[in-house]
Image (cartoon, rainbow, N blue to C red; front, top):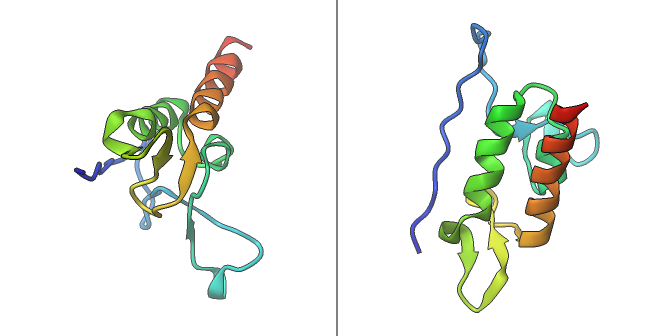
Amino acid sequence: MDQVTVHLRTTQDPPASSPTLKARRGEGASEGKPSPIQDPFGLVAHPVLDPSAKRAILASWASDACAVESLPNWRKLPETGALVPLDDILDALRALDSDALH
């Protein structure tokens, strides 16, 4: 299966350490290092990425490129290898769309 790589660009000038597909976690992070996002709603809650970047990442996760061969309703996240239900990804996309309407 081909692996999907998502390149992110911010809509503002990036700081010295530009945002990546990583979020800071209070527990389990060693010495303040960013931890990869492990679930769709973690991505929705990401404080730095804009909604269009979040939408693009979620869409790439929902694509067949991330499908698990023997489990068609599951996706394997490219960066972490975490398995998530496709329904969670679609729910996260709907949550982004809902926020955009309000």
